[in-house]
Length: 466
Ligand code: PLP
Image (spheres, protein in one colour):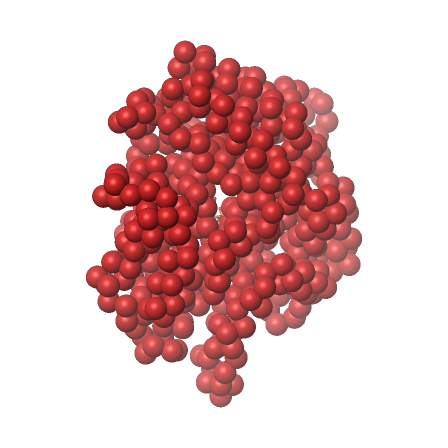
C-alpha cells in the first residue's frame, strides 16, 4: 500500500480517519455525527475533498503554508532524487541540499550567516530560546535569562514556545509554564484603548507602543533581560500589522539595553508579505535570530530553520577544551535531505515566477476588495495585513468594538466553504474572541482567484449578518 487511493477505498479512508486520527485543533464530538473532510488532491490554488467538491484554498493548507501552491512536480522530483541518493544522515555530517539551501537562504538575508535545520516552527523557536539562555550563562554569568514575548503573538505548541505564547486561549489548562518568559503589550492600533494609548495615532502611537516594551524592561531590570521575541506581523493573534515608527523604536530599545532580537518569521517568511523574502525586511530590522518554517518548503517536506548572525555563531565556536562550550542540541530529522531539497526548488519557483511581486500586487488587490466590503458590511470593524496575509476583524458595533460571537465566525467560514472557498479564523488572544476572518492564499493567486474569494466572503457576510 503506497498511500495513493483507488476510487473504492474512499469510504474506508473516511471511516479509518474517523476511528483513529486525532486531528489538530479540533473538537471531535461533531465527527460522531458527520464525516471529517479529507482532502484528496490539490493543484495550484485548488483542492478537492472526498466527495469531489472543489475549493479555492484561501489559506494555503489551513495554516498559511503552501506558498507555491499544490502539485509542483519539480519539488516532488527533487525530493525523490535526493531521497534515492542520500535520504538521511545526522549530526556533524552535512548533506548536499542542506549546504546549498543554506547558501541560497543567507544570500536573501543580508547580515545573517548560519542556518540550523529542524522540523517545525515551534522547534526552531525552541532552538533560539536555548541559544539565548546559553548566551545568558556564557556571557552574562547566568543573568539575562529573561525572554520577552508579546501579547497576541504565538511561537508554537511545545512547552517553552507556549511559555512565550501571547494567546491566552491556547495556553489555558497547559501550565505551569517555563520561568523567565515575560509578556509585553501588543501594538495593535485598532485596540489601542486597551493600551491606554487611545489618544495617539500614527507614528506617535507606534513609538508609544514600543515604549511600553521599554517600561517592562525597566520594571524587570535590563540586566535580567536577554532577548525580545516578536512576529514582524502577528499572524494567529489576529493579523496585526505594526504601526508606523514601532519597529524603529523597538530596535533602538534592544540596542540600548543589550537585548538580542529574535524575529519569528514562521508565517511571514519566504514571501508571504510580498516584495521581500521576509517580513522583517519591510521594517529595516536587524535581527540576531530569525526562525522560519511554513513557507520554507511550502508543506512538501517538514523543515524549519533557525538562522543567526556570525556574531552569535562566533560565541559558540570557542574553547575546545571545555566540553560544554558549544550548542549541545540536535534535531534528529534536521539531517533529512527531503526538507532542503524541497526548499531549494520552492525558492527557485518563487524567483523564476516572480511570486514576491505577484504577492504584493494580489495582496493590494485583496486589500482593496476587503476595504470595499468594509464600506458595505458594518460588521467589518478593521481590515489589516501585508501582502497575501490579510484579515478582517468582525465586531457587533464599530464604536464599542465588541467582537461578534464565535458561532457567527464559524457560520461565515462554513458558508464560504459551502460556496467552495476555504477561509480561516484568527485571534485566540482572549477566550471567545476568535473574531478575525483570515486569508493567506498561495503567492500564485490570480486576480480572478482573489475576486472569487472576496465575492464568497461578501455573500457569506450578507447571509450571516444581513
Ligand atoms: N510561530 C508562528 C508565528 C506560528 O504561527 C506558528 C504556527 O502557526 C509557529 C510558530 C509554530 O509552528 P509549528 O506549528 O510548525 O510548530
